[in-house]
Length: 300
Image 1 (spheres, rainbow, N blue to C red):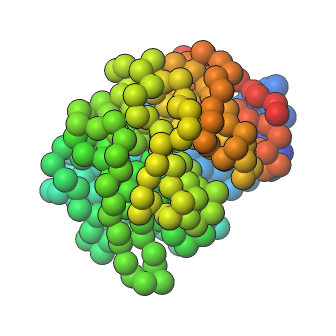
Image 2 (cartoon, rainbow, N blue to C red):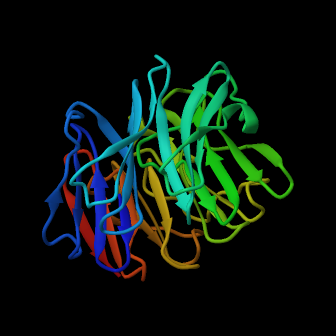
C-alpha cells in the first residue's frame, strides 16, 4: 500500500490487482494492468492520485508505471533471470530503490532518479554481500527504508543482518541483527526509522506466528547495536510503522500491537491477520491489509 495526502491510498496484490481510493477507502477504482493477471504485485509507491509505480515478486520481474491513474501502464523494467525475486520499493522525492533477493551472492538493487521512469541496475556498484541462506522478505514491502539520503535494509533467513548505506561516505556497513534467525521462515521482515539513528526491526518466524520469541528489536545508533524492548509484541510481525516519535504500530498474521513510548512497551489491539500497514500524510488514518484482500482503517 501507499498513501498520498490525507485521503488517497493505493493498493496492489496477487492476481495482478491494483486499485486506489481518493476518499479514505470508501470507494475504490480497480486499475489492474492488462496482460499481468497472474502477477503478484508485492509493492507499490504512489506520487499522486494519478502517478504510481508497482513491482512484482518472482520471475520474470517487471516494474510498471502509470501517470494517468492506471488507465494505462508502461513497463519500465524487466528481468527474466530465473532467480530474480524483487522484494521492496521505496522513494524519497525522485530517487528510488528496488531491492531483490541475492543472485550469485549479492542482493539485487535497482535505482532511479526520475520517479521510476527509468531504472539502473546498481547491484555491482553497491555490492550488498549476502551470507549463505540470507534473503529479504516481500511480505509487506518494508524490509528496505530510504530515509533522506540513507538506505537501510533488513534481511533474514539463516542469517539476519542490517545494511546501512551512507552515500556521502560512499560506505556500506553490514551489522548482525540478533533477531530470531536460522531458518528460511525467520529473520527481519520490516524496518522503520524515526530519524537517522532511531529505528525498529520486526519479524520472527511466520510459521509460528503466535510465538513472541525475539521478534522485535530497537536501535539508537543506525543499526550498529540492537536491544529488546521492555515488553514484546504478541507474535510474528511483518510490518512496523512510526506514527509519531512515541506512537508505533506493528502488525502481522497474528495481530496488531501499539506502543506509546517509542517501541519500549507494547499493547495488543487486534488479533486480525494483516501483512502490511501505511499511514495518511497527517498520521491520523492507518490502513491495514492482509492476504484475503480486506482493507481495514484504523483511526487514532
